Image 1 (tube, rainbow, N blue to C red):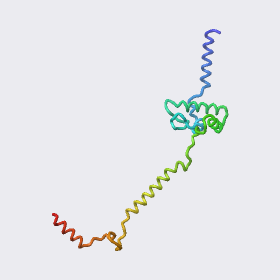
Image 2: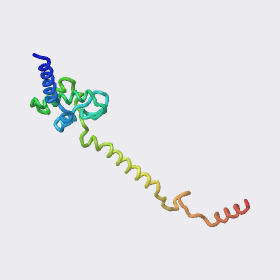
Image 3: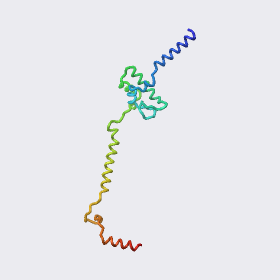
Image 4: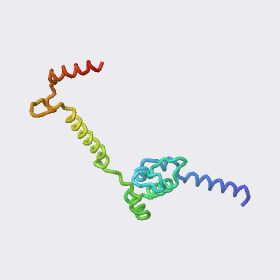
Length: 156
């Protein structure tokens, strides 16, 4: 083989490799992200495997490459997830809170606000005027008021 043929053959192999390689679009496609969303990234970002960290999370990229390859091989989502669990343990699964797990803090905050409103309303009510004891009757005696006014006049 001549040098020209070897060069052409090398170019042909390189181009064939590029044609078979996955593109970034394949790795962020809906089928790949559907499975990746159920997996927790263990790089320390505390996100699922769909994370979009710049310049790119190597852990997530490797997992997405594996997910894409498994999907191309015809495996179902459950089979892929089971394989990840077998390799990495159950901690790899990203368990999202259910409806009550998400609504819990809002329910607690609402109930606390209602209790605070009831307490404020209770303390804002004026006590009822009765002649049952001292401090309950809020009417000022005119004789005491005159005495207070005379004492205040002496201070001037």
